[in-house]
Image 1 (cartoon, rainbow, N blue to C red):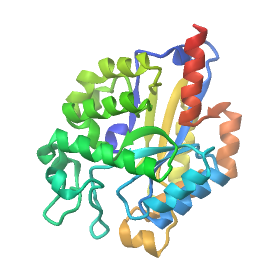
Image 2: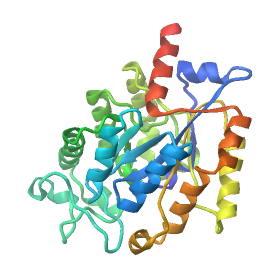
Image 3: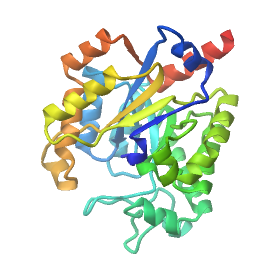
Length: 312
């Protein structure tokens, strides 16, 4: 999961694609993105269902997790699907834990006393050495490539990589080096800027570096935790779709089946099951069509951005 800084963030410096979209009658593009693929079998199965039967257009994979090989095999066998890497520095659940991909002796500042990745972002911020973070992230990318994952983009689990200036720089630098778009926005809103000053300070500079390499940057990003019932959560999502602004946005969801496996891992199993149900719901897909929102993947975002830039 990405942290709550992803609630709603909008850009002010816009790419050529966003400029065209923001013109009168401008187009609204949306990446419907499922986080945490690879976490467990329930999440893998639900993510695949939402991509095959629903309107989920993209997902990102947690390489360190035990069920990574299952989703990696699916991604390799289905190159038409859109899978990024959910670069992971945390292992947050009480009993279901994972360690780094790199050998622990190479990244000792990234693990707790039990040898697992730190439970929370605060521990990463306080203890992680930037050089060891880079070793681990490179190991995650290398492992995904070894398993044949056709990687389309990079993002950050729980927002750890935007929580410190040096980690933020590594995150963007890896995108540039591997020629992969990264989940990034040009300018955070006021609340986010207060919580994550490094992100606010470097956002414009780093987003421009990405765009100079023809790597697209999002205009807005949203994620919802609220809603005490399934009906309330569905209504929140539908309201967000109706209020979507012109440009390219991403909506982050978390898919799962509310079964014994997922309930043993997390108390969010019902919400994850709800996200799967909502984004395979014919009513929601019909509303996307009625609103004339074009659902795209990260691959399509990159192609659209490149084509638009070439036309300018």
